[in-house]
Length: 316
Image (cartoon, rainbow, N blue to C red):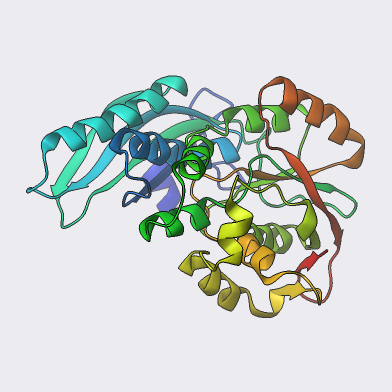
């Protein structure tokens, strides 16, 4: 009798690791979906950000996006031109990623929501996972932190336009280049930094890899204006929830500024990639990131042997 997976996927597509391979190919299908309400005021920019965020999971695995479907919630009392701008922004990012936009689905909703379901391909023998980090690896981040803080301040109308523009540019930037370069340098462990924050996603990497992570608070790359906003208390609500969720899996050295700890926990939108890189490959990888225009990359810590429970440590 065939197994459930064989019924769903066919006996020749499911390999020993449970990966659904494309028949006649050494590649597999990967899929992801994400959508959320606006985090910036400009509709087209919101569309770009939501699309870049939806693509990020595919890139974080080392995959290639192939096609996407729009997911839309939209109030009936708003001008449809706003929706047109959102979709145009999303289409721009899909074109940049060379991902075919095939249509989508919309519903009436009390607030605007937008995102995409994305399908891509990946080589299971040459991919990025959040496991595989090894003691002695260097931790490298490919985007500056602080998008959640900026969005929170924007909701309260207490942030300069230049700060919002810098955060928007970062969120709308694809992680394609960083992922491609990580694959080229045989990086074994990677994750994108989104709603669980740098430390939350770092904790998942630590658990999957059976290691501890050391993050140096004073080495973190921050978006313009974010340090002052964090000191003023504008970190997102996700920062508090993420800290509660992590519990003892997060250890903070005495004397670290609370605003920096909050930024480590802050919910990011379309954040960068957190990479665990073999020490001997770091310099070459950084050179390639700079040449590809990935400007905000920074070494932020290292991988250490696991304690009793894989833990993220924040030190000065």
